Length: 138
Image 1 (cartoon, rainbow, N blue to C red):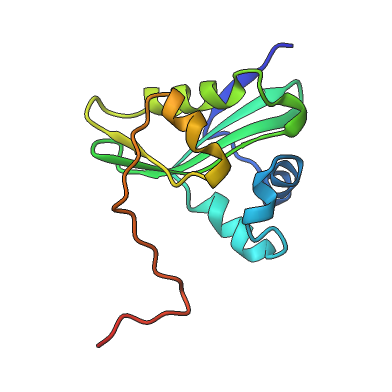
Image 2 (cartoon, rainbow, N blue to C red):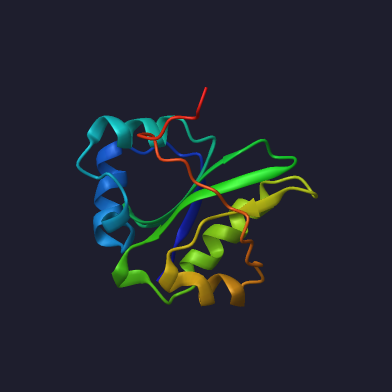
């Protein structure tokens, strides 16, 4: 199997949705909201994709300033291609695009915590989430 990794090669929302469905990430993303999915792809400034010929098999989607912080929002690998090192390589290619002091930050699915720890990530309990339905008190 020869996987090609591409940086910021445009993909469509439909390709993104299809990959999420073929990975375990589709369960935790708004794949039925096409407008949201389009916005997720269009407004990411670092997208690394993995291709087996013309088939999208993996993606690392990030927002970053390239100097201080890179938020890796989605790491998806098609289930048929998992455990082949594609996810690890997607993260490595992402990290190679960043400056020497830029941190790679992500929120892991509970089942993936051991995976990220093996790669050298450290657990940070200071993450906070404000759902859109909640309002910051005035």
